[in-house]
Image 1 (cartoon, rainbow, N blue to C red):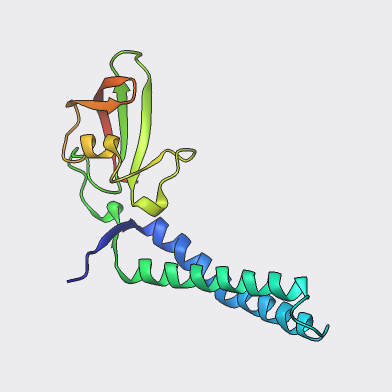
Image 2: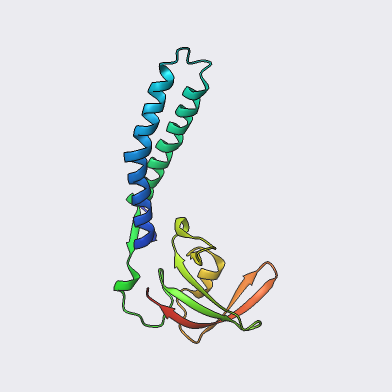
Length: 159
């Protein structure tokens, strides 16, 4: 049985765009670079050839990686799911730090989509595991390296 990996619609679109770019732009560019490097003669001491082959290896590995991720992805469109106030995969959650009164906002996404800069946290992170299944008004305690931190769920959005 294949284990399905949750992914947002946006995450799947980004992977598909990267795959398309690798196949239509990078592959031909690298093939051309290898052909040009071959024309320079002795391949054993040809740095351009070895660099191009390394790029080819990386690109093909990334193509295989993306194709395998998309093949097991369970793409979840949170906007198509009625909002009930319960935290689910793909939802954007506003939480209030009860110690500092600071409000934070995170979207719960798949592992490959996580980005702290974009306030997107992995569904497998301790924060997400504490939040999923809870509802607006619930208080959750999240274990951090500095000790437990209590948050109140202020809002759950399906964006």
